[in-house]
Length: 603
Image (cartoon, rainbow, N blue to C red; front, side):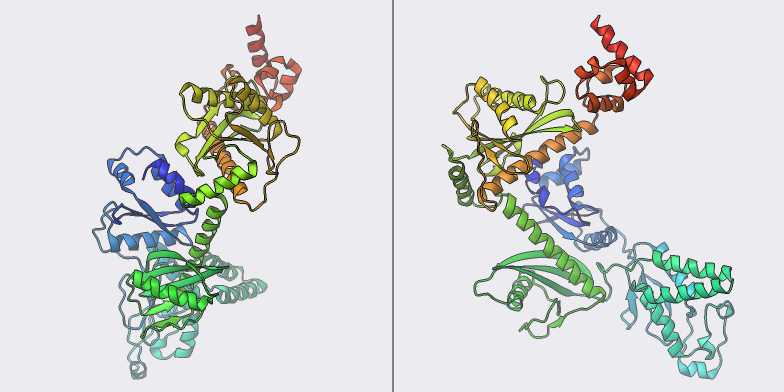
């Protein structure tokens, strides 16, 4: 995939956190990565010149990109690690060890212990996690130990052993960290109450426990026991800082298929998350067209059968937002109300919503992906609506850009056959115009553009759009007239915001129907020239390439030059300014430098 090809799809990538997968032309998985912003991270591969040979080779080999949106950077980190271990793509780091992330286990035993582990044993114990930081897990366990008395010993506290009376309380009991169930000093019912509080903490439901601590803190404060109140306050702070664990990689979910649906009119969109061993390994959203006003339940049943067969899923549990009659035997349908499975369902909903939003944008603003016949149909409609002599298979659009009235630049975008031709885009630094003059700037860039096309004997566009209305249109026509191109192309002005179209010399504008395909294409072209021009302008500013005569004055920096241009609008007006006017803006010392520079040069 080339940088130009990537630019055609860059805008479809989400800005959310997630993981991305690069595939080769043969469908081979080349690389898996994580990102805080998928669009920024993936774009970095195609806009930078990479020194590393392997990175350059990877970029050259990429054929298509897939992604999965998640809720946080931590989720992306966990999912990336699990997928790399499972698929071992050729361009990813080869994980030599079998290190796994820590879990908190609630043991399946009398008076259950809670502790850190990396080993998952299928003995009925409950595992919460995984967590990305061992240190964070230890902090949580210490917080629990500090807040809720539970045993930490490994004694077998069966009722029979307790009745024998052979076990004695340890130091933890005397420190107040344990209530002594080993000697029968605590009932299982009381222990379970504390254990339930711990589970609420580990699941992120902190409110009940926080309320208990707040009540204690207020009681201690009322009794003038400020040290004890401070202890409770620290407990509250610790709990509030704790974040519930991720459901992206779960030890309890196992192998499941997750489906969500979004219906809009005659179409339905179904997202599928394939979960193996608690890890999302595949994400797919499909579009289904309803023929007989089928219900969501009917569409979902069909999509489940199709996607499970396509991905050869053997999962025996399906997670859905509502009940569906699914004929396959041995399949459990789960409609979760909370927990890890509900989080997976919510994540699937997030992915299907993103898919449909992007689809709407494409339908609204773009012709990419449509057949040649469909693109031609829109162009024929545009020709009819604007009463053009020729079919506008080649359209160009110009726009000026400046920063707070300073540093003017212009941009030109080109659309061929209704699709952006980015290799033909052009940027213009204004050369002949001093100060900010949109009309003169437009006249300059239009002249330079078509004078060059004539010199290089390049084909001219059938339609030229000037973004800015009557004034800029008139300026553009001055240059078209100088080049003797009147009649060689149709030039129109597009009024900002109002989306009115002006022809040269006409008093009245044309307003196309708001939902017409013609206006949608014009909007797309206008938005593209704005994006392209603003991007260029920001790049120039960030690199500090805007230079003017003011910055050449010794002792005058870029910020002062910018300030002067914002006030006086041009270098020429700064030259003409009085000493008093300069002092008012930049002070006596800098004003003296500027005054001497210009007046000495005039002698």
